[in-house]
Amino acid sequence: MSPMSILERRRIEAEVLKPVYEEMAARFGETVAQEVLGAAIEKAAIAHARSFAEGETSLQSFADLIPLWQKDDALQIDVTRRDDAHFDFDVRRCRYAEMYRSMGLGHIGHLLSCNRDGAFCTGYDPKLRLTRTQTIMGGADHCDFRYTYEADPKE
Image 1 (tube, rainbow, N blue to C red):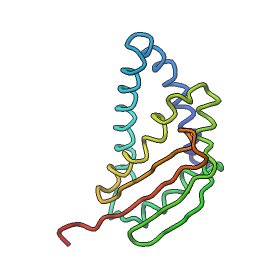
Image 2: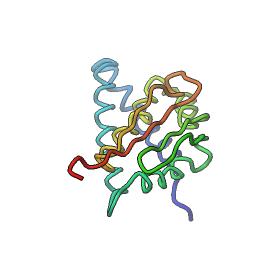
Image 3: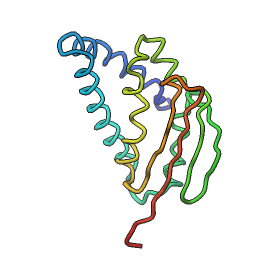
Image 4: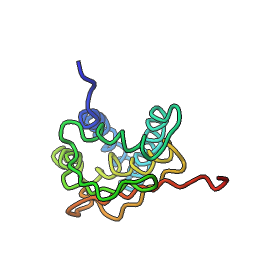
């Protein structure tokens, strides 16, 4: 039996979180509900990343994880740069965004998925940084992921 894909995991999480989010929004308002959900998801992303960061980490070891997020054709990407200090790619199709929209969660899809990306870097390796100026979830035609790996200043 193959392990569950991250896309499937996110679908199950979203099914559980949807009524919780809706109840928080009804009681406390959309702003507070989004703040709470965003903070909880960020903490979960950092913890998830730490589970992958056992041993020595690098930009290469991080890049080797990307196929986990692509499983089940979840992401179609075009790599534009890959070297020891940079890993850049554009996402041309995102089934995560498609799934959240189909579940009626497009307005919080960025919290459920996109905002995990930078937090994952924090948990995986503090030298790993993500710059992204647009996402499909936010309405762009592609996501622009630009990862950099900063050398230790003491080196």
